[in-house]
Length: 111
Image (cartoon, rainbow, N blue to C red; front, top):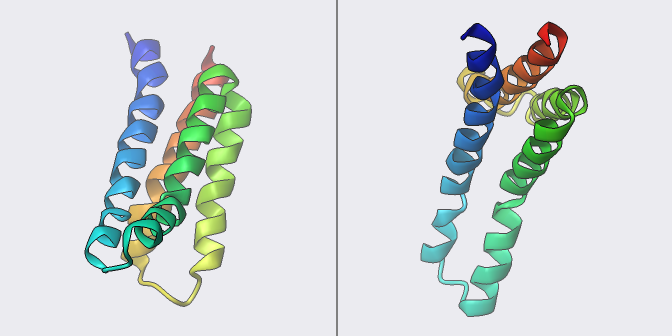
């Protein structure tokens, strides 16, 4: 039972986080960019979601590699916003990403 939980926890966390990051892109619809401007802005705002989805797909097949990708994404976010955000931003954005990566790697180790 424990291994089943450890198998699904990072996957559910990663998918949930992808949905969460998608919510940040929704604001482009009220900016008045016009049709093509809105499409472009939406594609750009969804880049973090694309990265999370790609990392999830990789981790689903190769847990260690995917886990490392997740951890690198989380650390990259911290480095990019260093001194520009509060500790809450680090925890809310980078925390789940690093946790998911760690859980993917932990599941592989325990297997």
